[in-house]
Image 1 (cartoon, helix red, strand yellow):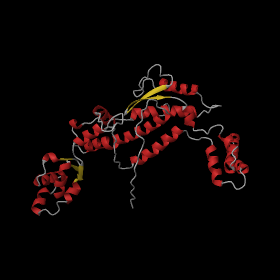
Image 2 (tube, helix red, strand yellow):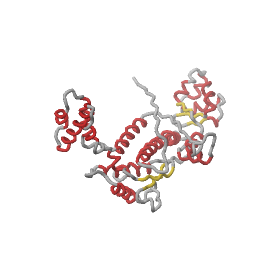
Image 3 (cartoon, helix red, strand yellow):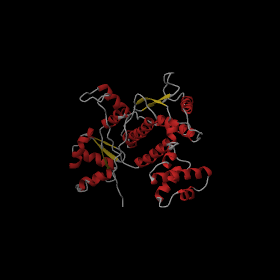
Image 4 (cartoon, one colour):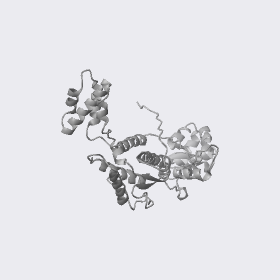
Length: 351
């Protein structure tokens, strides 16, 4: 049996502020991935089908936007921006990362991708701590500040001490457990035994497990966890039939009752809506197989069906459409499918 599910995916929109940090970068990576999915499922898939069926002519060519270069810059291994940041975070520093480490990361981004088509140049005064990415929705400049420390997602250094000094017995116990887990992890021993011996009687086993796990080595960075989650989501969406709702802002100031034509057109271009309209302008949204159409004509008189014995199916279907006065510009015959214009769907149903 086939089990179907319906899911709704709602994400943060593309972000570009006066100052953009690591949060904006990860949000925009997610938007790049979903825009790439839109390009494939709505535009490229349609063109591929029409070409495979032999009904897409030279004048029907549509430039399919690609997110490949931008995603390669952001997530491509080994030197993409995010893998580069993760590589630096994999080498913890005593005392934590400093501003100098962030500036070194920014310098490496400029050095490794100096000629990349999606890494536009920034003003010389900003180059020390900033870089820009040309996303599908436009150029965004990112300011690097505490990125490496934030990406490591480490607990504050004084958290364990503060918990241990709490007057609440349960909270104080958490501090003791964390101290034992960190000590045991540093020595390479069994976290579980250390936590068990440090915990007071009546402690929560559930808390012990989660505390131990949080202290374990090899914890993924924020960025790597984000990319992994996007990879899993992408595999799910690739197996799905997706419908898209594209949101367009009427103006940049978010002012009611103001429609900025140039601002809206810019969004339509970057979202791939214009390319999708080019595909729709070809105007053949209804597709029916020859086999299904032939089944509609099983009650024809034998003197009619005998005329088409041994003839290809497309010849028989073309004759039937002519006989039922379906306009010749209302459909196209593919190799395995008949493509109908939207206004011919009712005509085809009556047939």
